[in-house]
Length: 66
Image (tube, rainbow, N blue to C red; front, side):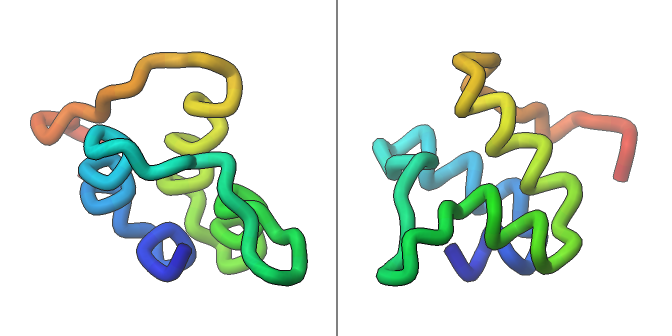
């Protein structure tokens, strides 16, 4: 959850590729997506939202939006 909150999209992607559950929640019931949104981590939140909707499971390291 920490990497999502601090907008580390590449790490979130790696964790998802290795089987991490993008729908996991913390002890208070807060989802990873909600935590990212609360911290203003827009890129990570967008990536997690795609996971929830069954969207593409990959993120391009060649993305020009850096």
